[in-house]
Image 1: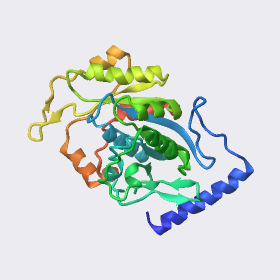
Image 2: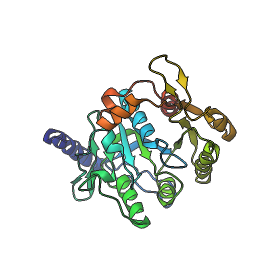
Image 3: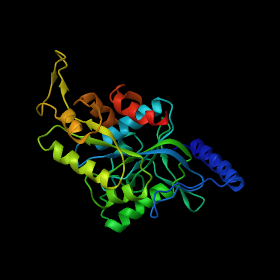
Image 4: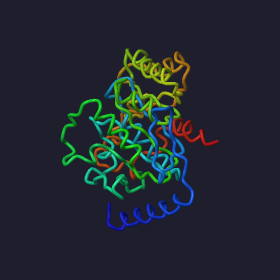
Length: 288
C-alpha cells in the first residue's frame, strides 16, 4: 500500500469517526454469540464459500467471485477464514502487504489494485511460508478479530473463504458471523454426493441457506479441436444439486490460463470473464 493510499484511508476513517459521534450506526450481529462490526464499518451482504473437503478450489471460486463483483462496480472485501492454508493474498498479488494498525483498536486491511479489501493470516506473518501452528481457541480469536476489529468501511459484499470441512473454525463462522448464504464448491469424483452432503447438512443445522453449487475442475477444453473432455468422468454436479434441492451455479474448467493468473497474482486484471455468471447472478440477485 502506497503512502497516498494509507493517507486516503486515514482521512476516510477520520470522517467516519466524526459521523459516528453524530449518529451511532447499529451494529450487526447474529444470535447471542454473534460477532459485531465496529461502528466505522457497514457490510450489506456476507456470503460464505464452503466445501466438504480440501483441495477442490474454494479459494479460487472466492477469488473469481470477488473479481467479478468488483468488475460489476461493487465494493468487496474478503475475509480469509482458511487460517492455516491461506492463498488469497498470493492470488491477488498482495503477499508483500501487511495489515496495519489504526487508532489502537482497529486494523486496516490490505487493498488490491482493484480496491478489494483483504484480511488473511498471510498478511500478519513475517514470511508467507511460515506455518500457522495454532490451536482452536486462538484460531477462533483470529476470526473474531478479522471481523470485528477491521476497518472495512462500507462494503456491498464480504466474501468469507471458509476452511475446508466442518471443524471448529467453520462452526465459529456459521455461528458468529451474519452469513446470509453459502456457495458450496465441489470437484468431479465418485464421492461428491457424500462430500457435498456434509456441507449442505452443516448449513442446514446452522440454519444458513445454500445459494447453490459450483463444480471446479469439471472439464478440459482441447486447445486444438475445442472439444470438451471430462477427465474425471461424467459430471455428477447437476444430479447432486437436484438430490439436495439446491441450485447448480456453474462448472469451472481445468484451464492453465486461470492457474497462470492466480500464480502471477494478476487475477483482477487477466481473469477470463463470464466464468461463473450463474453464481454471480445468484449473489447479486439478492439485492433485488
